[in-house]
Length: 372
Image: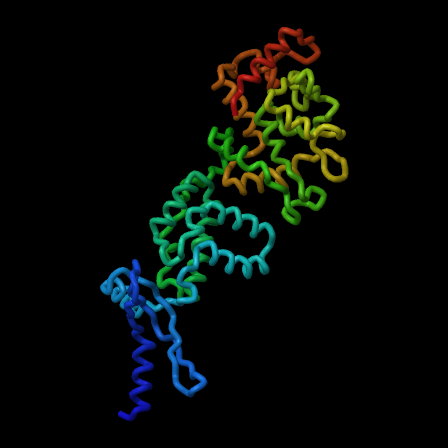
């Protein structure tokens, strides 16, 4: 074997195996594990190795194990410390250039639910970590769960493609299909935990082209708050004019849209005053950019459904009415009481019957018992 062959053999050995060096001084991890990724020629003509570091270790045994594991399953050292969050950013930048805003919104919402993984190194993530996240979203719809799993799948696909990991752990995660809603049964109310989720996410803004342009950039989350605090029908709220609201007297005059008893006075909960105050000064409490009242279908498909999807919840606007009645009952105002029936418009009494001061005070006292 010639000298050139010896050098070539030595290069091949270094490229394949790497080396361990004990560094001088009092170090916590003195054993440096590195591999040779190439060769360079110095100004004097000598060949010089180009190193990549695998890591630093406390003992030689740990260092040997690390080097052995690398040689058994080589990975891209440029990405050695890359996190779940960093891979998501690299993948999503390219992906969202080719897909619609509606797809982007859903995936970005799912990504937020992966928060426990964001700062973890991708090479440290195992099935148990992924399943823990899926457990956190198990109460949400299969669609939301599928999006979370899609995030896992795409992040690991990127990692595999770039030799950062050798195994895709997302394949061991399943979606709980038992949460699929029965199409014949509509959800009638929101739980207290779901109501809290709504209050924790009041910054949702309608985005174009998800909705028609005249509704874009609108924040309508306060409409859900008003529905939860009043038990009004969505049609009643969307037709409500600011002139029918008396903040000082804490009353809302509701023009009935269903029956004679639907025409009524609804007391304003003290916590609801700031939300209503912010909406005053227009013709309708909720109107589009053209000054027209927002109608039901645009409200439902442009705002409410995307909002529920963003939060991983299920239900329609009418569920807020059932929620109000249920929670009032929990607070001691029975669903069979005349007071609650008057508030929601189930009573045989009509607004044409004069509400006395005592009766009105009774409605206010009742509504203030509600705790959302």
